[in-house]
Length: 270
Image 1: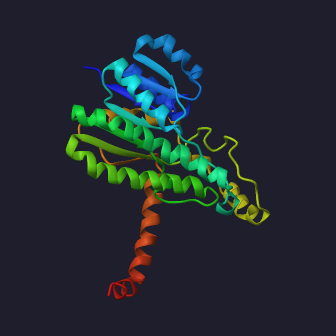
Image 2 (image 1 turned 30 degrees about the vertical axis):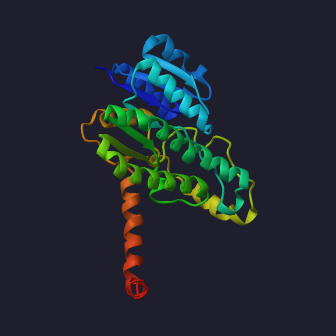
Image 3 (image 1 turned 135 degrees about the vertical axis):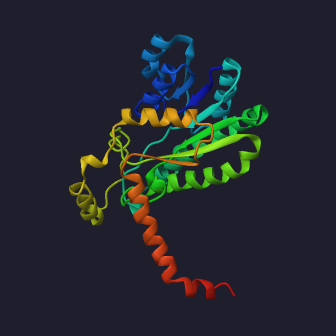
């Protein structure tokens, strides 16, 4: 029997590419976006297999209503992919209160609301797979994108905890952690008001940019299909060739520091 997938942020980038791949594989897909006109081509090609739904994931009540609508339409929700998100560019000091809260509303709380909404359905059917699109920047950070880093670290902590809570119900949780990809998440116009003191570090990052560190969205399709179809999916899956070396370097540095200060740490136990 064909599984039903609910995916947010399906209008472009990863979301659009993955939605089309799932439809090609014969899955039924409920695809949400703020602008569902971008899904007209898939609706014309795949007909009733796709259910485009307008959703602002920031609105908790709307997320719960959408999940109920999908359940009533397809009869089940087997897989949830929380993909909606964006990146606020700017140093930590530069972020306004409104910008900081908005970043978390979408990237963290939007993920939380849809997750909470599908859990009763998956618990009742004693099966399900929740896939959270995080980032390598939820594992290791880069400067001048601090609020985005923080929102993805929050998704990581939430999802790791969730995995330990819902395994007993037959529900799997996976964190997808891409390195940089050629999507419009970085050039989307979300920039904090600049403080000149940070111009130097921004210029250094721009000058050191290597296009080869960014992957191609289309190349992620086989990986995400394999994840969806895995009998025992992993808790974490990097996407791209840069993520694992970056994570290894980061954790080697962390372990070195923790070990150097181990005596102080132990003495502080009492």
